[in-house]
Image (cartoon, rainbow, N blue to C red):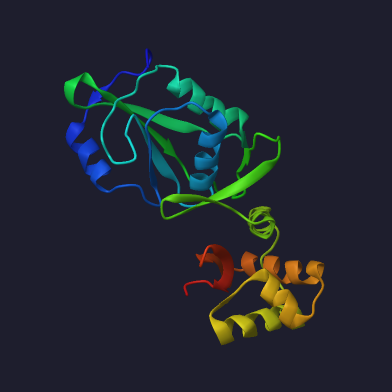
Length: 219
């Protein structure tokens, strides 16, 4: 915090805290594990972006930042434990009694599929749902990366794609396993159909009943 000058903003800070934790906001009482912070960065970057309020407890009580190294740990999370590395914007905000809260803003990544490095060394992508960081499925990551690769979105709607669209029309949303089971397609063929339709914005992923499902965009 030595190089980050705190600004007055207690009223704005209270407004933000009053919103609670949600899809684009998370409270962090303290920063101790860069890997855990990397999950939050991944989740926000793969959705609409968001902000971390560091020095705020889960119940919204302002505790203030205790360690000036917190920003360094967050930067480490964004650069060393996120793939690709992410750049964050920091603002120090003065609250009551000389307490300071750090606001860290994470932009949405145009090329979704930002991954966080886990303690076991594996890389996993996360997605922000309400106030939770949910692990994205490998299918979602593949669809995201295909769409952002610059591959032309013009595709031919074949039997595999039509089967998926019919299943969605019949039940509003389906899991990938349900699609494979009902279509009798191979995993490879079913994956290709999902990726193709996702690239045209015809379908998307929704989180329902604690799992990601495939649905028509806008549904």
